Image 1 (cartoon, rainbow, N blue to C red):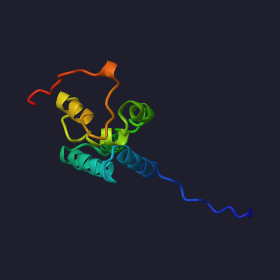
Image 2 (tube, rainbow, N blue to C red; image 1 turned 90 degrees about the horizontal axis):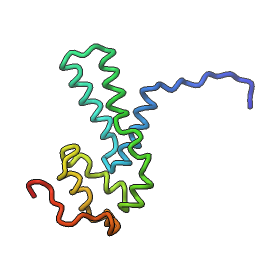
Image 3 (cartoon, one colour; image 1 turned 30 degrees about the horizontal axis):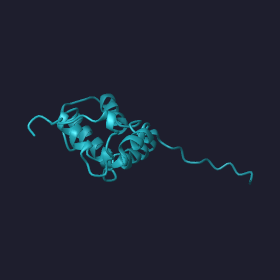
Image 4 (cartoon, helix red, strand yellow; image 1 turned 60 degrees about the vertical axis):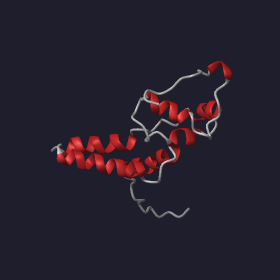
Length: 128
């Protein structure tokens, strides 16, 4: 190595977190930069309601980090359901926490059936 001490450009936290958000897109089977777009919408809403700069900073990091860690159990989900990315790709298709959403995810063709002892027969989502 040469003795030159050229300073490397510092990595900004915002850039690092934004780059990590792309992994969330991949893990949920969403188009690239989905989380970045979600963050932009959140920031526009924050501005519209008159949040301070510090509060908008909180919105920024929260929007980018909202699903970080949701893939930590991907190996378990893949074991139980087959393709965990296909399973998660329907995350935004239904209301969060709804029975219809949970059942729709489990009915996806790429999702492996549950072992017999965990199956529930005749379970239907409200309104179906």
